[in-house]
Every structure is written in structure tokens, then in C-alpha cells.
Length: 537
Image (cartoon, rainbow, N blue to C red; front, top):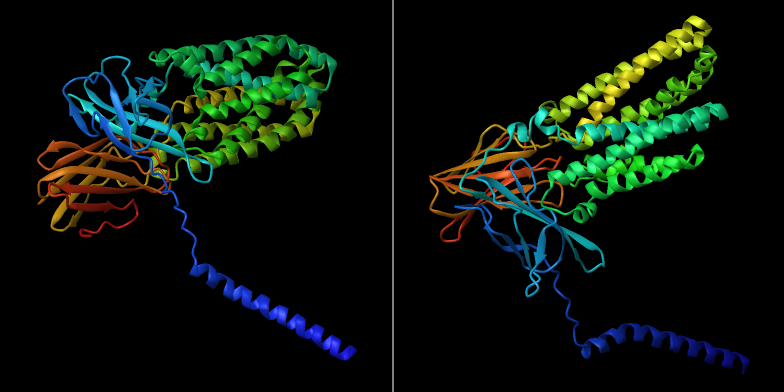
């Protein structure tokens, strides 16, 4: 009976197992036999410019009263502006959204537009299905009465790129580097109450000079953008960063104990990464911003420490001061210099992967000049370490004198570095030599003039082409941003794109789309430099 009972239990377990297995396979079939209504998946929204007035690539007889952008879907526009061929803005922050149609954005020029080429750029964010915001940006171009040529070398020349920001920017840069590096020297190298007191006398004029310079910098930027209000400028990086720096330097003006000022000084120094090339969508990114931050701190430790080492030397016992503190500082400088060099090289590679573009720009020439000064400083520093190790009065005197040379070289390096903020890095993979492609019996000639990133003309000429309705030029690179613009019709089969489309530091293809009157489209894809251009596609 026990065996029979156990056999019945086993049989029951087997039946349950079979039922569960059949349930697994039969269950979905029964569901399929009585399917539930399918849920409709919402279509993914694509945000793009549907219409504009003026139309992209249009030549106007007079300055427009307004620019109207009409998108296919409404989204949050954060920034839009009108700019000329020198990148001077005419309506930063001045735009309204049509209350009756949120797809329409309207911006008005701050003043009447003189004859020439103008661009309209927009940037915003739109929600997507995963809850994250998607960046939406684009640009169009129109001209008033005539096209204006692009600036030489794809941007303004060396002197023209220097602006009213250069001098106050250099003073502010100098003050922040000296403040942070000098305070670090006093706190971690000198470690002496008397040195603390002597440094406080230097802090007062340095803080005052720095606060004044950043405030002047703010108003210089405001004068360059007369069409926007102070509140609107304060909402942009180029506005609120100097305001915060002014406020902090004004607050710590009365703080005498250096231990409390160092974190604030470091934060103000790091804010400079938000207004440089490393934070721009064309050249920067998180990697570039991290390298720039390390570059600034290493530069501050070296230059600010060097400044403090010289100005805080006591009148009596200078030999002992330079022998003791100079030896400790040399070790700090030995760590800082490789960081300065490596991050500088990394940022240069990040901004400009092409050597030809690099040496053909004011930015590249300035980087080379800065590199030469840094090499001279490194050699001088190596010689100083050699003499300080020898010891003796003669070696100490030599160290003190050559340290002054290093300081002057450092100031020249900072002047070049401050000017680099105003210069335009040039980066592009497009060939400047005329190229031609033939497709469906139509030949397209294309040339970029001048061959640089930044402002340029893309000239196109067609042979054996039917009457064309429109010609569009698309710039395709490794980034998601692929600007496309309608070309200006110059007549006789000649077309031109005039603007700053070549802004990506990556390899870029140019696609020319010729649309005939009957709607037929012929696409010509011009490859980047280093790849052969076939006569036919």
C-alpha cells in the first residue's frame, strides 16, 4: 500500500509536470487565438525647419524687418541669432514665439542690415521617448543686395581677431593664476606666518585688479552686443562667468587668512573653461574641458608659485630662501610642466587634426609661439634645478636672477594664451583644390575658398545640367550635426554656399544635391582630402 501510495504520488507529480509543460506551449496559442487589440506606438517626432522668411539662400533687395523660422514641430528654442560674415551678432537673445503657433519663432534685427551675407542660427532642446532632451540646431543664410566675401583665411586676420577683450582678459587671467598659484605656494611650500602676512599685502592689489578686469570684460562684451540687455547677457556663459568671478573676488577681498580663499580661487579659475574653445560645440566636449581645467591648474601652480617665490623673498637671507623654498618649488614645477605640455598637445589635437590647417591659422601660429616659450622655460628650469642642487652663494644668486627671466617668459606665454581665446581654430578635411564629378551626364565642379574651417565660400558650377529648381549643399561628418543649406543662385549654372559650415574638426564630406524642375534629384558626393575623386559616380 505504501508503494502504491508513493506510485500514485509520483504519477500525480508527473501529471502536474505535463500539465505545466502543455500549459507553457498551449497558453500562447490560446492567447493568439483571441488576440488583444494592438497598442499603437507613437511615431518618433523629427524636428526640422519647415519654412523660413527670408528663405534659405535668398538674395533680398532690402534689409528684412524680421526673420521668421517655422518648424515642423514646436520645441524649446534656447538661442537664436543673426550674424554677418565676420561672425558679428545682430539679435542675440531677441526672439519671440508666436502665441498662436508655437512652431513659429520670430527675431528682429537690432538695426538695418547693410548689404552682404547674413546667417541665422538656432539651438534648442526637444523631449524624446527615453525622457532625455535632444539637441536641435541649424542655420540658414540670406544676403541683402549682394554677397559679401568671407574673411581672409576663413576668419579675421591676426590683428583683427584681437578684440577689446584681449587686454582685460589677459589681466584677469594673470590675476587668477597668480592668486591661486601664489596662495598654494604660501600654504603648502612656504608655511610661515611671516610669509602669510607678506602675501596678504600682495593679495589686496591682485584681487582688486582681477575684479576690475573681469567687470571691464563683461561691459566690453555688452558693448559688442548692443542689441541685448544686461539681463540677457547675464544669462549667457560669456556674461554670468565674469559676474560670478567679480562677485567672488570682491567678497574674498576682505578675507585675510589664505586657507579659506584657496577653494574659491580654484573654482574661479576653473570657470574659465566655460568661455573658451573647450566648451564650444565646434571644438570642445567633456574631454577637452577636463584637459583645459588640468592645463589651467598646472599653469597656475607653476606661474603663481614662481611669482610668489620672487616677490616674497625676504630682504635678508635671500640665499637661504631660494635654496630652501626654491628647491621645494622646483619639484612642484617639475610635475606641473609635463601636465601643461601634455594637456596642451591633447587640446591641440582635439581642436585641429590637420597640420595644414594648423599652420595656416593665426591660432596655430600662436600655439607654436606659445610652445616655443614653454620649451625655453623648461630648459631654463632644468638649468635652475642644476644650479640649486650645487648650492653655494653663486648658485643661489644665479637661480634668483634666472627665475626673473622665467617669470618674464611666463608673462609673455600668458599674453599669447589670452589672445588664443579670440583666435579661431581651423579644422577641416575638405580639399581646397577644385574637384569635379560627373553623374547622369551632368558635371559638377566644386571648390572651397578659402580652404579652412570657419567662414568660406563653397562654389559650385554645373555643366550639361537641365534647368534646376534648387541646389542644396550638405556637410556630412562624424558628428550628428550635418548642416544643409540652399545655395545662392548666381546664374549661368553657378551656385554658392557662403557661411561657416565647415566647423567640425572631423573629416567632412560635401554632398551637392541638384533638383531639376521636374523634381528629379542628382546627388554629387565629394570625398575629403586624401581620397581620390572619381570623375564619375
